Length: 449
Image 1 (cartoon, one colour):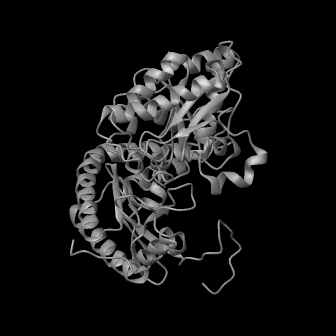
Image 2 (cartoon, rainbow, N blue to C red; image 1 turned 45 degrees about the horizontal axis):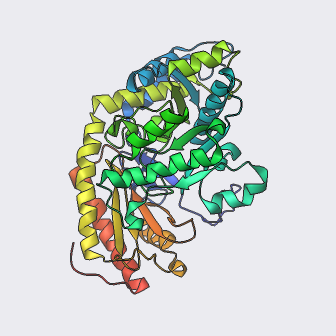
Image 3 (cartoon, rainbow, N blue to C red; image 1 turned 90 degrees about the horizontal axis):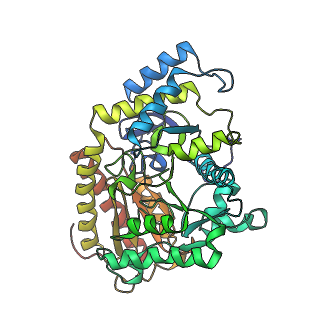
């Protein structure tokens, strides 16, 4: 660590050098072992170094590692497109490949815009999103993102899109089990469409289960169904951002399937390639893609779209999800882990909320559970607890919930191969880490979990 790094990312923070990874574990060069409690950034859904995926990639490397899409079709990309279409809602028979989540979001909104143009609806260009939300790091994706620390520096460089509040019932004192609560938040979409002028609204982009910005937020009952109704009423395209929640982590390949609500366009990445290769996709209903292609083509693309090596990895990842029945395991182990997190809330009064679906789970720290007042920002809980857990060999993922400047939530999202004994180990390390954090911050601990 004493050597100067030529790399730079968000900060000057240095971490140990990764040596190897297998299953749910990673080891640094010193031999210290870490549990990947967040699957990286909710990416490594099937665990590290899966031998069947590595073998599939090796076979593809022996044939070709690149074939430009304008010069060749490839078996790997066609196979992955077919697999993806089979897992998508009925009618979603077209797939466009990208290299990551930001590219997927950009591609989705560009497809939506070109569909509007092809249908003679040039006045439709606004894509409504939610606040807080995160949809990617490119300027187009940031325009949809509702997270001040990431968007504010670039505001003069982009055309910000309209926002409505995310359905955070737990902060508003509303019962998420009531359909009336879901309708309360969904009706904000209708109000915003009317405010903007329905003829100008192109789409509404939503994470079916929230990602890093809201910490695995599950919408209240009736929310997704009402959103679909409202979009239909005003001719607005419903775009599901499944970049983080897709790929089986919620117990369904697409989290939107939890409600049986079909969108018009889906963006997916992260767990789609599961960390084996940069990979993402947009899948859409055939009526949208055919309309765009018939009008002159999709004016968009990336050099590595449909890369055969990445696609071979993607096919193998899907095969492993099915072979190991990992979506069922995500549902089963997710229920167990969620129950254990609720148990931690009994021990630690400063855990104000536990939420999520399958193995996309989070807990939020507060100063007062009754009022959901956040912890003092000076505690930097979202950083400090992550660092303590990291020292203890547990990797977590955190963000600040309230506008990015206060509130602290932590995503606990191990790979879908996790077992009951793995969960015991994760929870044990969480207890050790929370005890130390509580001691440092002077926070109460009630009793053993």
